[in-house]
Length: 248
Image 1 (spheres, rainbow, N blue to C red):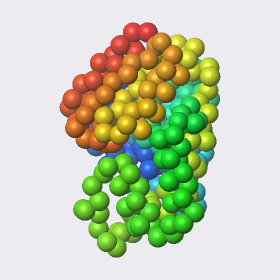
Image 2: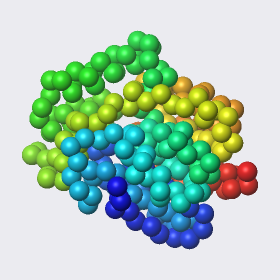
Image 3: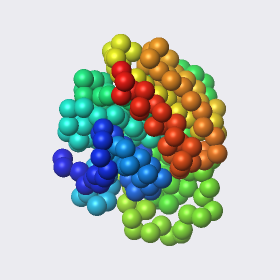
């Protein structure tokens, strides 16, 4: 599928993949200054406006949509469910990935069996099977993330309700089995978390260990789950990583 995307700047190509319950603009607007030295490619995932409506969200479908945007060689940055998509892409097309940055990665099957993670997964499954109202579903998920829900309008605006309905029919991230070959992939990897959730910290630790010795692990506090909204501090950190990856 041909996705709506924004392309800006010049220099080495960096593809950004947004998560759920958001848009590419909301996710990556603070990264726009990076266009001074990098070509930023920022798509909206399948089903997210202004793309056509979709009845479900699936990281494999998203990966297939986004691989062509790498154009054979690009740095790849994914946030939340977008990190799951990025992991999938890196497993499918490692030769096209210059570097891989994963931000606030949700549970994958690497952490299955841990009691706290199993409880988190069980709660997600419960919501899927019992909550049919998009606003209630969205509020309950934001509460799990520790995100503020007091500013969420009620009823939800049409665009927000569309995101919530897509999220309600999203393939669970814990069904992803990250490729074992990624540990041997030569490109540099960076795993970033926000330090706000013990569960997500465990997920990020597990991913970093799986990706092997060529992996940096960083915690950046101050914006919870939406780490990239720190703006300049995050951009400085990311740019240092990208520049080091350019030299590999």
